[in-house]
Image (cartoon, rainbow over all chains, first blue to last red; front, side, top):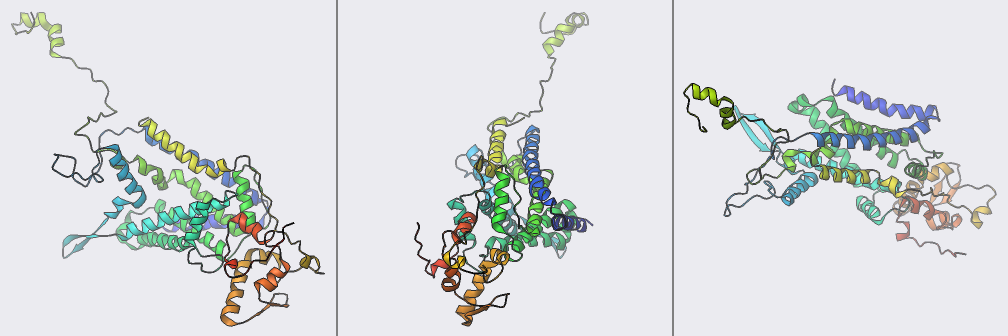
Length: 330
Length: 132
C-alpha cells in the first residue's frame, strides 16, 4: 500500500496535464503560468519558513557526533575533520558532508551469520546517493540555458562535458543515464531489502517515483517525443521576466514535465526533501566539539531563584537563638 | 531565534539562488526568434516546401541530419525519399544549404538562442555569406 499509493498518485499527476492540455487548450495557461508561479512561491517561502522554524528551536546540549580523536594533550594527534573544535574545522567537516556525503560513506551492513551479528562495509548506497544528487544538480544547473537569453559560458561548458561522447542527435547527456540508474537503484533498494522496506513510508516512495517520472518525461521529451524547443524557451523566459506568454506548438509532454517539477517544488517544503536546508542545521554536524574548552549554555536555562543559608538565617535568627541553635551572625 | 546571523545569511544565499532566473531577467523583453527563409532559392520556388513538413523539420531536423550522415557514410545511400514521395539527394551542402544559404539568419538563429552548438561545421564547410 505504501508503495502502490504514491505510484498511483504520480500516475494521476502525469495524466492530469496530459489530458488537460490535449483536451482543452485553455488549460495551458493554468499548467504553463498559474501552476509554475504558485510552485515557485510555495517553494521559496515554504523553504524559508521551515528554516526559520528550525532556527527558533533551541539546542539544549553540545551534541556533535564525532568519530575521531578529540583535541587533547599536545602530543596526541587530533582528528580535525572528524572531531572539529574550531569553526574552520566545522566548515571543513560540513563541506565533506554536503559535497561527498562523508557520514554515509561509513554506512555499514549488519547480517546474522551462524548466529552472530556480522558487520560489513556497504558503499553502494553512498555511491548511488552521490551519483543521484550530483547528476540532479548538474541537470538542474544545465536547465539554466532555458532561463537566460545569453547563456553563460560556464553553462555551455557544463553541457559540453555532459554530452562529451557526442552520441546521436540531439546529443546524449551522461547525467540522464546516471540519474535514471541511481534513482532506480534507490527505489529497488527500498522494495527489495526487507529491513529497508519495513522502515520505508509512502513519503519515501513518493519523491522517488516523482523524480523518476520527471527524469523519464524529460528524457522522452529530449530524445523521443520532441517538442518545439524554441517555444519552450520563450515560455520559460516569459515566466521569469514576469511577462508570461503561451507560445503555440508546445507538445503535451512538456506540460507533463513542467507540472511534475511544479509538484516537486510545492511538495518540497513539506517533506523529507527539506534535508537540503536541514543538513546545514544539524546540531550533530554543525557544532564544534569544544564543550571542554567553552562552556555551553543551554538556552532553556532560566535564572533560578536561590535562597541562600545567610538569607535563611536572616529570616529565622531570633527563633534559632531561642531554640539554642548556633548562628553564624549575631 | 538562535544563530540569527548565520541563518539569515544562509537564507539570503538561498533566496538569491532560488530566484536567480527572475533577477537575471528583470525588465528584459523576450527575444523574437524567427529563422529567416528569405533566400533567392526559396523565393523562386513555386510551392515552398522542405524535404519534410515544417513541424517535423522543426523538431526532428537534428535526427534527420544524423540519419542522413549515417546513411551516406555507412551505407553509401545518397537518396532520401521524403514523406511526400519526392526523392532528394542526401547532402548537407548541396541539398539543405542550397535553399537555406543563410546560415547566420536560419541555423544560427535558434541554435544561438538555445545555446546549441551542432558539430556539422567541424567537417563541412560553412557557406560564405556576404553580410550586406
